[in-house]
Image (tube, rainbow, N blue to C red; front, side):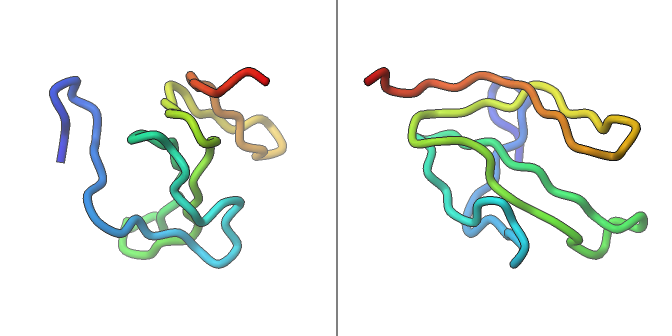
Length: 80
């Protein structure tokens, strides 16, 4: 499902994997996620949330030459 900004919205329980960095939604209405599917798109290989307690928005994702994930986006968090 896509929202008014043509960005995908996940409705219901979002699948994360046992080896996920973070398995819990913590966003204030928005959270970022990273998911890896098998080459045929049928098997969930890895899926995790990224972000903190404020809203988060993922804008870019890339892999470096060592296949390390690099993500970029926006985050709203309280300043203490």
